[in-house]
Image (tube, rainbow, N blue to C red; front, side, top):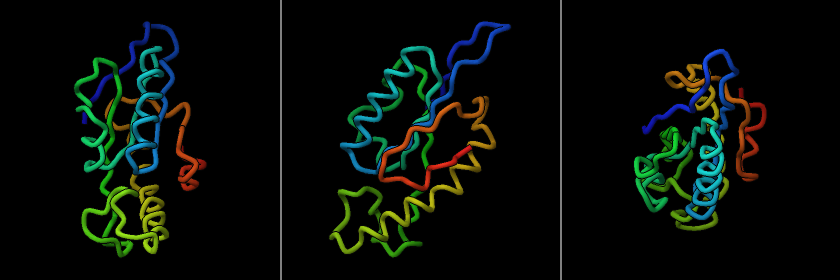
Length: 143
């Protein structure tokens, strides 16, 4: 994971911490990464949640950016939801018959994400805001 921290002036409030959770498909993730770069460029801390397989598909390595974006990789539960191995992105589904399985696997990420956010993933402050794809209703009420 690439880690950075938004600069905070001593004696002031810490920078806001945005957690971004895109749908696991290149088009959605790429647009949300653009949002992450914009937010980060304005002095906020951004945590970008994605599966390890999907991070390289964004077109550049996370370390290519000089902005303080933290990439939080989550293991995608393919087998647990009856998906073929490696089916960690919506565009990798062999057919729409597995769409519900895919969405259920996405929802299974909630427990892992909550635990990581509570552990504050290193020195990160608690999230100020969670921005998620409309396809992820399971992100509602995240800490």
